[in-house]
Image (cartoon, rainbow, N blue to C red; front, side, top):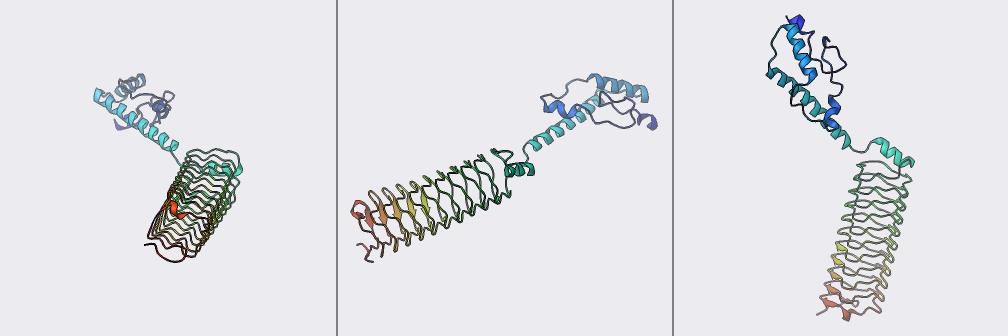
Length: 326
């Protein structure tokens, strides 16, 4: 009896022999559900043939329960195959995508998962990576001129010495990212998260950073003349020696920050809230502080000619002569 049963496997393929000596994978089961098929509710023609053949070969009566078990097995295969297809569709960007971006074969990879990818010295000028995951990726010395990196996630990403001139980085998360000596003139970093970013000696001339988060960011010796820092948050931000002439800090919240020996002539601090920040030796000539709130800051030895402090609300500051306000 057992020998006869081994030749009576159910036919799962419309092209297979009903008396095949081994079970066959269904030809269409993988794709039936993937293209919108539904689970079988009643015995199919091929199932009925299988049941009849089993009865003929083994001379066993085949119950409805056996058919239900058979259909359940087929549905299980279909569900597993469909899950595999979904997983494939959601898989991270392949090495081919990285290679194609580097080669210039493709110029758009919106929403791609490029985590950890190496784009060192790659020419990615004008590429569109909107919403991509760039965490831990390397763009060291890469050309990203006019690239679109809006809303990307780029935590601890390396942009050191990269060319980001006129690039769009608005809304991106650049927490702990590296921009050392990066060329960023005209870059748009509106509403970007630059918490703990390392941006020493970067060039941010005419950069747009309104509403950006710059808490604990390092911008020592950076060049940010004419840059827009309006509405930014600068808690413990270090701008020692930075070039900030004609920069706009209107409405910014600045606390425990360092502007030591910064060059901020003609900068606009109107309406800013600045507390416990060090402007020691800074060049603030003809800067505007109209409507600003200045509390507990140090302006000792700063060049402040033309600054009308009377237009600001002030308390407990150390003034240019080293004397603290009453």
